Amino acid sequence: GQQLNQSPQSMFIQEGEDVSMNCTSSSIFNTWLWYKQDPGEGPVLLIALYKAGELTSNGRLTAQFGITRKDSFLNISASIPSDVGIYFCAGHMDSNYQLIWGAGTKLIIKP
Amino acid sequence: EADIYQTPRYLVIGTGKKITLECSQTMGHDKMYWYQQDPGMELHLIHYSYGVNSTEKGDLSSESTVSRIRTEHFPLTLESARPSHTSQYLCASSMAGRETQYFGPGTRLLVL
Image (cartoon, rainbow over all chains, first blue to last red; front, side, top):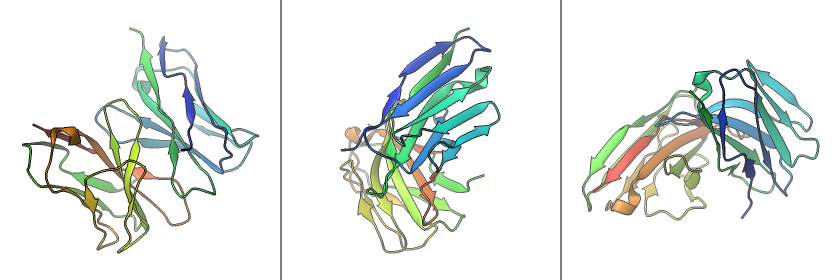
């Protein structure tokens, strides 16, 4: 089936550092979504992207829809302890009715 | 803010019992979904619905069944729970024509 490659799988960072993660695919997507999931909770939508090249911010978070439509990036600036969690990307293709999900990036802040 | 609810939040049950996980949304969304997720792992779609009386199986085979008699309600049933069904079950919904899905808090199921 279709796959999204999400990287890195996990990140250990210091509080205050900037964070970058990305998702790539061999297929073209028309929508990219970024979610955050806290332990024991459902994923919460962070940013939705609908156009190639689109750059959208939500507070300290910024996400971009790649020009090739095969990738997307999420950046978090000046990380804080509540940023800890798992970040998932999801994409949608015209040829498939359902979302394709990445495997997640686990963000851990070093004490 | 998404208004989608799941009950129970946690369920511990013995093998062979029948269980129903409830999911309701108050946003009037046509599309609803059930995902299965092991802790810290990726989401797997097990059922979805485009509207009332529409149900489809997802990519991950599941022994559960679903029904969609009302727009706002999408329950999932396991006729005979087994330890292999232990997981987190997430319900989501989206508007017709939009792919952005909104999730409930999940039900964590433990089958002994």
